[in-house]
Structure formats: structure tokens, C-alpha cells
Length: 289
Image 1 (cartoon, rainbow, N blue to C red):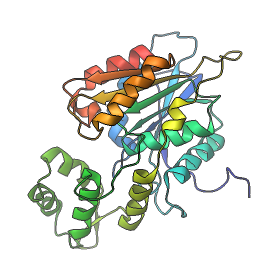
Image 2 (image 1 turned 135 degrees about the vertical axis):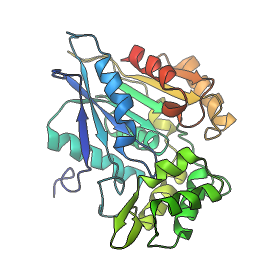
Image 3 (image 1 turned 180 degrees about the vertical axis):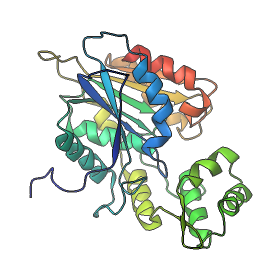
């Protein structure tokens, strides 16, 4: 079997009205999310491009493996496997993928994808995502705490409201509860969580174990014919606790010596940069594109 044959994740195309994109960017959500989480924001970004731009961007909202409508992928359930899924997606669509944008878990998938296409990508956006390995316990990670919570909720669930109350009672915000509820689906006389929690556990374990700084630190080759040089933009929430001080310092140190990499901090944003400061994030991305 060809290395790029096999499982292809679900996706949706977003472009400006009547646009014919010359290049495409993958948009990758965080753990427990889906491509739909980014639809409104990305549509605004697509429509902001100047009419008649010589190389307009189109965007591919991807449901990463075992998320959204990308259910029942084959093992192994790893960051590397998710990156390979993206290679197959590009091959299947036959489009010119020149960029990738990833938030949180999706950021590490973006870096793994970058490793595989170092000399081809022109824009990489890492949105409040830490390339470092870290402890994976529930006490050290909100994502691990969410997984433990989802495992603890008896199924079938009587109603969506019961699910929301269970999440709120565990100390999570209404916004996180509503976001997680996007994974709750009616089944028979009740509701069930669509996610395969064992697969989520495997993906999170691998995410926490990976060290992907090398992908950021690899210098780009000079631009080729009809191609720009690679630019990497790291966007951090000023109030985010997902990025430890050591990683923030490492980002800044890398930016000081690597002209292809920029660090942008959104002071009022937490980890959910696109929800906490959508206008600030929009301006960073619009200018970078």
C-alpha cells in the first residue's frame, strides 16, 4: 500500500465568495474539538483577503482523527498518525497545501506535519500550543481532567442538560460545557458521547510525550520559483496557563535568532485565543497572510 493511502479525515472547504484559491491552509482544532469550532473565524479570515490578490488562500477545516465526523480511524492513535492523515487528505483533494494552523493539540499535529513538508510550507501558525513534552496527569492538564470527567459520566445520558450540569458541577465553565456538548448525540432513548474515550486517551498520551521543538528550529530553504519562504507565527494567550514560562522563554529566544519566526502575545486572552480575543487573533493572522 502506498504510504499516503488509507484513512482520510473529514474536512470542509472555506473560501471567500467566488474565490479560486491558489493555495490552501489546513486548520486544526484542539483535543475534543472539531473543525466546526473554527468555521466562523476562518470564514472572516477568508473574506478579508483583498479582491484580486495574486495568490489567495483557501482554508480546509479538518476533523482530526477520532474527532467530529472523522470516526473509527485505524491505530496507532498518535500525533504522527494524525499528520499522516493530513498528507493523505492533500493527496486525495489534489490541492496545493502551503500552510497549516493548529490550536493546542492541533498545534503539535501541525508541527508533525511541518516536519514532513519542511521545504514546501509557506505559513505555519502555532496557536497557544506547547511543543514540549509534559506530565499527562489530570492534575497537570485540563485536557486530562476533561477526559477523566467524560469517563465518569454514566451513559446513556438522560438529556443534554444533564450533561451540561455534570460538566459545570466538575468546576468547568459554561463555555467549556457547551463546547464539550457538541460531542453529545441522541441515541435511542438517551444521549451518548460520540468520542471514543480510549482513542482520546491514546492521542493525549502521545501528545504529552512528544517533543517537537526541532520542527520549529529547522531553518527554511530559500524561496523557490513561485513560492514564498516559510514563515512561522506563534500566538500565545497572555493569560494562558497551557504554556509554561520555560516554553514562553524558549519561543522568545528562538524568535530572537530565527528571522523566519515571530511570537505574538494577546495580553487579554487565555488558552482559547480565538474565543477570548478573536479580533486580536484576526489582525495577527490577516497581517501574516
